[in-house]
Every structure is written in C-alpha cells, then in structure tokens.
Length: 192
Ligand SMILES: Cc1cc2nc3c(=O)[nH]c(=O)nc-3n(C[C@H](O)[C@H](O)[C@H](O)COP(=O)(O)O)c2cc1C
Image 1 (cartoon, protein in one colour):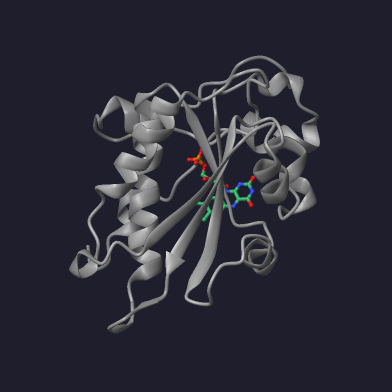
Image 2 (image 1 turned 120 degrees about the vertical axis):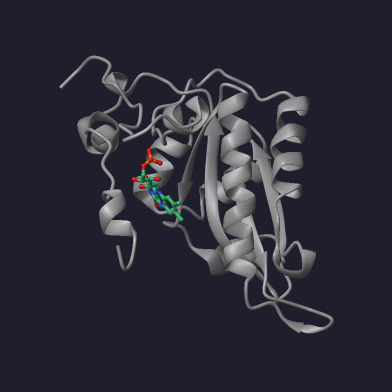
C-alpha cells in the first residue's frame, strides 16, 4: 500500500493538537540535521519533567548522524531497528539512574518515561518526530559508553523529520502504513 495515510489520533473529545498529531515513524528525511538549539530544547523539555522527590533520575547520550557516537549506538540496536534508525538525524539513549547516594530510586523508570514524554512533546512542537525503541542491547551500550552500574540504558530514541514511509520496504515500514490503534477509555478506567 502506497500513499499517505492519516496518522492523527482518533479521539472521543478534542485533545491538544500536538498530542493528537504526534506519532512514531520509521521513515526519516535522511538529509535533515538537528540544530544545536533543537537538541537543547529537547533536553530542556526532558529536564523540566516532574520526578519523585525531584531526584531527576534521567541521563541521556545524544549522538548525531555521521558521528562516531551515532555508529556506536546504532551498532547496539536490534538489526530490524538499525535498518531504519540509521537515517534518523540523531539517536538518543535514555538512561535511568537506579540509585543515588541515599539509596535505590524506586520510581526511576517511571520518571525517565515522563522525561521522554516531555521530550517527544517538545519534538512535536519543533516539527520533529521521535520513535523510541526497546529493541537494543543495553549491556552493549553500557560497555560501549563505560556506564557505572547504577546507570541503566532503558530506551533509544530515533529523532528527526518524518520521511515518506512509501519509500521504505514493506517489512520496515509496516507499522507506519497501518492505522493507529488504542484501547478505549472504557478499557483503561478501572471500576467504571
Ligand atoms: C519503550 C518503547 C519501546 C519501543 N520499542 C520499539 C522498537 O524496538 N522498535 C520499533 O520500531 N518501535 C518501538 N516502539 C514504538 C512503538 O511501537 C509505538 O510507540 C507504538 O506502536 C505506538 O505508536 P505511536 O507512537 O505512533 O502512537 C517503542 C516505543 C516505546 C515507548
């Protein structure tokens, strides 16, 4: 199936247009380069997320395309992800801090996720798209970047400007060509 399909969320009531239009793509404009200001804005958005006790248990590895760091992150992705993520303008490794000097941070993963939600929203405001990935070798990233044991790579985000999914092989672009789906609100709310 070729041609553009509507990636907007179908919502029961209106929500913020940036939330409704945000979606994850595997197709990226291969020539697009992120500016320093755009990267700073993404990190600022993540930085100002809420966290348990304001512990801010998030750290990031940011690697622009055509840099040695990008290749180092790319080589840690599952093959299926690397195939399309190689064209992103940047790869960002989201790292949770599992413990600080006071002890374990039980909500680290939750807080890191919130910081990434802020980042993806800011990306949408910048006209950028983000596709996050769980399909990568976290131990390989830790080894490659010599991370201490309390820092755990949790996801990798491919960031850039959305390209044309029609140019990707069906096996790669499959999800981009299917309608977006969600559980209904009734299914989400426990107890009615
Ligand atoms: C933690 C996490 C891990 C994900 N892992 C992958 C992945 O390894 N490969 C991939 O292509 N997409 C991955 N995704 C993207 C999801 O498939 C996508 O967000 C989901 O299908 C909903 O689509 P939407 O973001 O367009 O609403 C991941 C997303 C998240 C948040």
